[in-house]
Image (cartoon, rainbow, N blue to C red):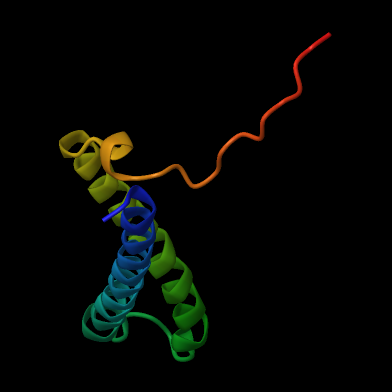
Length: 95
């Protein structure tokens, strides 16, 4: 496999993994709300909890993904297996 193929597969796999983490966080927070917070909070709290749950799930998945990437980057030499996503354009020589 080429570096470009590795990069594309890594991006696709990372995206799918991040979506799965987001969904798991969403249901985990929903479970915590239903089990522990619903009896304590006032009526109608679900109306503000669902959007807050969605945002919290995205933030939590970002933080989890970032920590996993830090560990992965320590173990794997990224330059050896992956191409950079953005390359600098060649600048004309200065006169």
